[in-house]
Length: 167
Image (cartoon, rainbow, N blue to C red):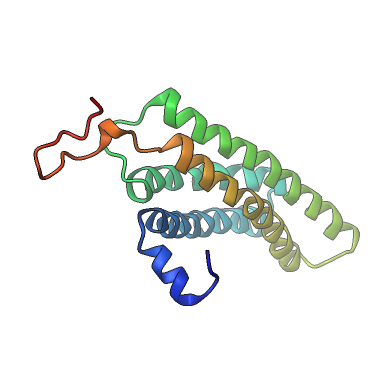
């Protein structure tokens, strides 16, 4: 794939590209929700970085799951507990562990350097965000290839009367 604006735009118009763009937008929404909750809990309520990040991840995962499933991958109907919900939340808990470790580590470092609480809040939030950023690409691949993969039976019938089901 070429790394030019026209090539990126052409890719964004493909089915895979549309998923990637939607996944990115959902990620931005989830980050805004999570970071706002984290900044409020840590910065205003003075919770620990660990507790703040746990709450932020729990709240941010809800819109992330719903928007990814329904909008980014176009899945309809009831969620399947073992094939969709549990794997999604498992990934979220892996991200939670990594981002909580990152936030907790950042809190420890900034407290040793006697940084003001406002700057502590920014650094802790940035550490949690960076941890999620590391996991972002891997999650897209997992969602696309495993979790929300479109199966042939999920396709709409073709206009020529074919059912879209394998024979």
